[in-house]
Image (cartoon, rainbow, N blue to C red; front, side, top):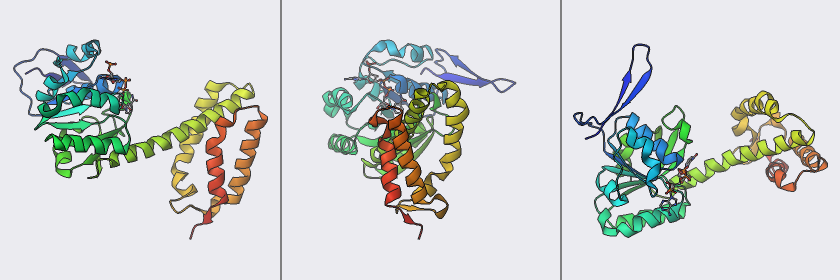
Length: 298
Ligand code: NDP
């Protein structure tokens, strides 16, 4: 069995030895990674670093080069990769790609365990779970809350949903990526939480785009604006997110909703006065509606 050694030298640096080390047996679960895009490569790399025997497969074999150089066998087919694993992790572009790869395998999948971390709707995850159950596959749906460079780093986490006992069984493999969090037995829940968290992230990105466009429209310099003002400001405000509007639509007294509504109306008017597109102010309208309808904290 091929393995990868991670050595810690005298000054604490981790050095990875990629090699054809056939003599070392790993007691870690054998994992297959199907899909070697930016994320699949990061997942497979983290599994190798954690000492998992890791088989990889990708539609375009050339994307496996760095992983095979580290000792990961490249399976010729998705079916062979899954057969060579205790847990197969599927990380493809979308639900259609997952179906294109797995559906032709049908009953070959019986007795296998699949964790599908491909982005999709809750309905996709529930349909996948039903299809897998009908073919005797243990299935967990996942949502990756990390980007490729943060896989395996502090803060990275993987949302999971599906049968709790299957989740417990795949948890040791998922530990290579970060903290894994089981959000419920309904297979669609991980996608629901994933969509919710990504919505929060894209709301933040939309806010940043509007801020940048405002400064650019006044001929401001964007790079220092971003690094010296926008990012420190956003970081300073993050802890106040739950206080601004809670789940009941209540606003704390020190963040008077009428005061916020005035500022939001000014922001909308100022954005338009700079000649910028209405497309940049959708999130401001959402916040304005929240403030106009807000109740004081009970
Ligand atoms: P990439 O675009 O880098 O890779 C897409 C992968 O899907 C490739 O392996 C590609 O194969 C494969 N693929 C696409 N269509 C098909 C098909 N019809 N049949 C077989 N394989 C197919 O995407 P990422 O790796 O970045 O993302 C993968 C998943 O991870 C997505 O669901 C994404 O939402 C999720 N994710 C990504 C993050 C990121 O920051 N990158 C963050 C969090 C989650 P080929 O190489 O042959 O084209």
